[in-house]
Image (cartoon, rainbow, N blue to C red; front, top):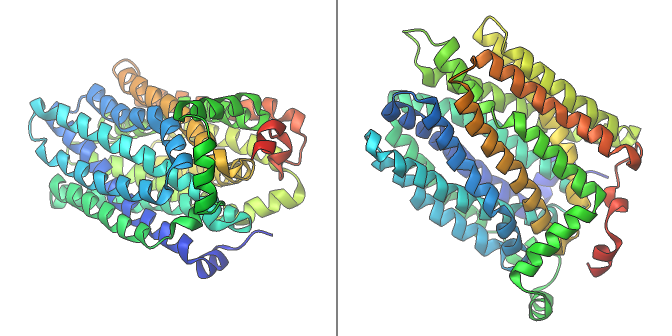
Length: 435
C-alpha cells in the first residue's frame, strides 16, 4: 500500500520538516540561479561561453563530490551533514554580491563551485535519509512530493527571481538565497537524528568500529553498482539522459538571446518564462506520480511505461525548438517535462526501494554524481555549440539525445520482465546478506 500525499504529510512530522526545509532553500536557490546567470551575462557581454562555464561550475563539483558525500552520509550523522551544509551555503551565496565587473567573473565561478560542493553533501544526506523518514509505504508519495515541490519552486523561484532581478536588482536575489538556507537549517534542526537511520546510535557506533576505511566504503558502493543489474541499468539510463538534458538551460538561454528576444524584451524574461514552464511541467508530473505509479504497479506495466515515456518526452522537447511562438515553446516544454517528472518519480522509487540502508547513500549519490557529470559536460558543450549552430538545432539535438535513454532502458530492462514493482530481486545477494 502506498500512502497518499495527505496521509504522509498529516501523519509524519519529520517528513513535513524535511519537505519544508527543501521548499524554503529551493525557492531561494532559484533566485540565485536566475540572478547569477544574469550577472554573468551582464558583465561578460552576453557571452554563451561564459554562461556555459557558470553552469559547468554549478554542476561539476556536485557531480565529482557526490560519491564522497554519499559515503559521508552513510558513515556520519546525516542530520549534522544537512545542518552544516545549509549554514555554509548561506555564506557562499553572498559571494555573488562581489561580482560587479568583467574582472570579477572568477568570483561568480568560485561561488558556484562552493555552493555546488556544499549542495552535494546536503543532497547526499537528504537522499539517504528520506526512505527512513517516509517508510516504505510513504516512499512513492515522499519521492514525488520532494521532487514536485523542487520543480514547482523552479517555476515559482525562476519567475520571482526574474522579477526581483529586473525590478530590485540582482543583489536582492542573492540575499534572499542566503536567508533561505538559514531557514532550511532551522527546519532540519527539528528532525531527530534517529529518524534518519534504521539502526540505533549504539548499533551504528559498534558497526563503525568494525567497518572498513572511508575509501574502501566508496569502492564497495562502486562494486555494488557494477554488479547489480538494476542499479547499473539506472546508472546508464540516467547518464544517457543527461547528454541531452544537460543542454536544457543553454537551450533556454539561446532561445532567449537569439530567437525570441526583441529590442524591447529583456532576455531575463524569456529565460525565466521558459524555466518557469519547465518547472511547472516537472512539478505537475511529480504531483500525478502517486496515481500514475500506483496504476502502473497494479497493471504490471512499469517497464513499458518508463520506456515510452522517456522516448516521447524527448521527441516533444525536440519539437519545441521549431514552434513559431514563445508560448508554444513553453507549452511543449511543459508537456515534455510533465512526462519525465512522472517517469522519474516511478524510477526513483523503484531505485530507492532496491537499496539497503547501510549503502543507500553511496549508491544513490554515485548515480546522481555520474548523471550530473554528464549534465555538466553537456551544458558546457551546448554553450560552445551555440557559437556554430542555431538554438533551434540545439533544441532538436538535446531532445533526441534525452529520448535515447528510453531505448537504453528498454534494452537493459528486457531480462527483468514486465513487473518491476519489486526490483529487490535483482539485488546482489552477497551485499544483501551483509545488510
